[in-house]
Image 1: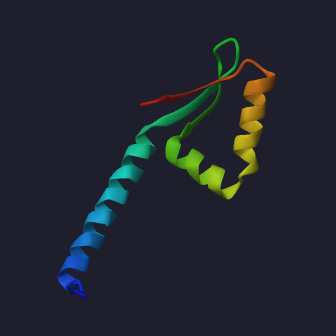
Image 2: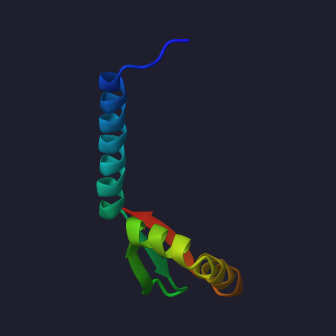
Length: 79
């Protein structure tokens, strides 16, 4: 069984780290926008913040889905 060299492990960690960094930067540029039936913005968050909130407080996405079902609310992603 071959073992990977420490140099290979470090380069893999660096490439994974740079990929995660790039994803985080891109997600902070995109926005989640929730509008009501008249087109007024009800909520405007960065995708990164929305992701953190959905992980930290899992009930919030459920409330948003109920809002979409009960009232004519639209959820969109903007750059």
